[in-house]
Length: 154
Image 1: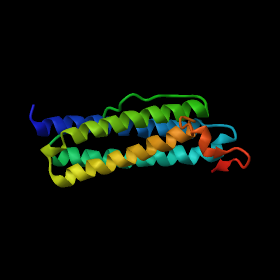
Image 2: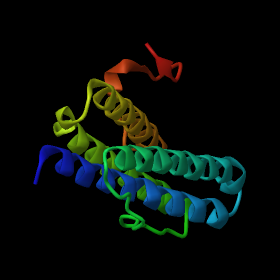
Image 3: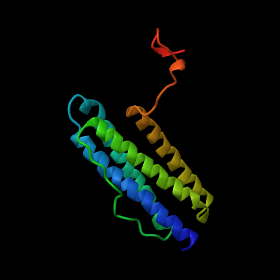
Image 4: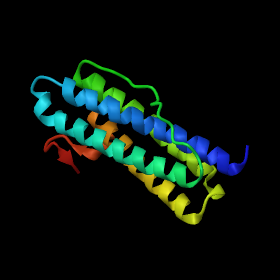
């Protein structure tokens, strides 16, 4: 397999995760209930739209490289409550980040602009992972950095 074919294969994996994001986030947007609905419906809806935009962009890149964009999404995780939805979103974004990082490993097969474009996607995915780690409580602050009498950082 040529390096260009390997890049196309890996871009298709990234596209599959973006397609999964479209569906997973759309379902979460319509399924979220309770008082969380007011907060998270729009978050999930916007995340679905962003994933669709990413899927379209990567599909265009695959086509310009001479490949055929996939129509098969990656694993779609479902949940019935907000914590589960956020955990599923975090898992999705971690998988998408790994897929984009795998693209970067072989990006020299394209041109410098494509490599930069992939790096931009990696940065965006990392921001999503970081945000969802905070939302799911996966970020732990060092106890010594908090002034407990004021409830703020020292």
